[in-house]
Amino acid sequence: MNAVQKRSTLWAWLVVLGCLGFYSIPTGVIANTSGIFVAPVMDQFGWTQTDTTMYRTIQPLVSAVVAPFAGKLLQKGNPRWILAGVSLLFGLASWASAYATELWQWNLYGVVFGITAGFFMYLAAPVLINTWFEKNAGIAISITAAALSLLAAIASPVGQGLIDAYGWQTARAIMSLFTTVLSVVLTVLFVRKSPAVMGLLPVGAERKPGESAVEKEEELTYESGATMAQARRSPGLYMLVLVAGIFVMCAAFFQQIPAFCARTELGAAAGAMAVSIMMVGGIVFKLILGALNDRIGVRYTGIIAAAAGGIGILLAFLAGSNVAMFYAGMVVFGGGYAGLTVIAPMLARESFGSLNYSQIYSWVSTGIFVFTAISFVVYGMIYDTTGSYDLCFVVVIAMYALGVVLVPLTISISHRAWKK
Image (cartoon, rainbow, N blue to C red; front, top):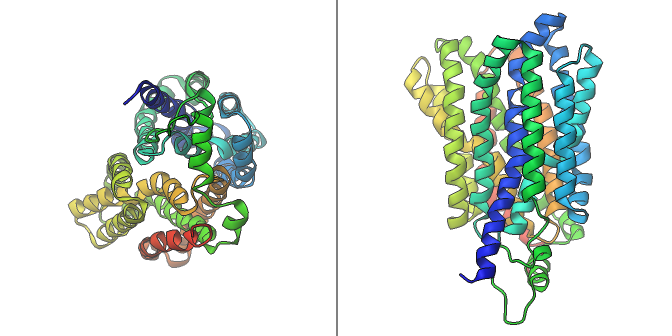
């Protein structure tokens, strides 16, 4: 490995650290711990749970609208400053929400959350990592996703401890300020748009004699990707969005697990433990799926992830009062849960290449946000209509089975649009 390759590798992993700043930290510490603030806010202001959590319904809908514009801005502008500004805005809005006393203020926070999440929640990290890594992109993406889950696992009990000691407002203010400072600092220090602007190469790329970094980037990009016109005409693009939607709807089902357990012989304690087990399984599976993607490709890794999710939910469904079998199902389900943040971005790259990755993946991000918004409604309607979660389990298993079929099919059909 020569000096340029060593410096390229170093900077690529520093960019991953920057991704932890604008993506893993705010999502893990703030977004994924929102549940611990619901009860104390309801108790203080006397609001219903629907009213209190309405901002979380507003957020993905706004993000779905913003994501396509975010993709274009990240492609044309400087992600370093765009994402630093986004991190600052999200952090300050989260801090301000600690002092919100009216529902309209929380809903306004949902709008700001939605605007900023359109950039940082699903889109920016895959875009940057796929720019900096010709090889090993899978493990790099999986690290950012695993770090997010680990941060959420740590932040939730810490945040609850702060609430118990100082009240929800002080706790939220502390967590928000911590997130803001760390996010902005890491983003400014380590996010860079591309290797070429620094005279470097993506990890795993080699220059021909006399070839400049810019020329190498053009070779890697323009010879290996679909145009937007080709992508929009291809059924593969819409299948790609559907696959990502399947993964997010199935992953969202884990939030129904505590309520399911509380209404069965398993009991509420098993439900709480199951969520922790699944989160740990998700962290491990994210790293496994990332490594597998780099070795065997996303075609087979995606099948493995979807199959694991379906098998895990099937085991949990058939467990009855067998707690051990139910927990085993939750561990395996972690593979499907991990697929959202690992498989979706790598499937987009394999399907349509690098030429317009940011814009193409913005379509996927929009789909993810839309499916997120409707998932809670779907599961809620099923339970309200049937009085049971059984049909929910069947729907999730069926969606994962569809995912097993769609992953390789999406790749094959997408390639017809631009590969000769």
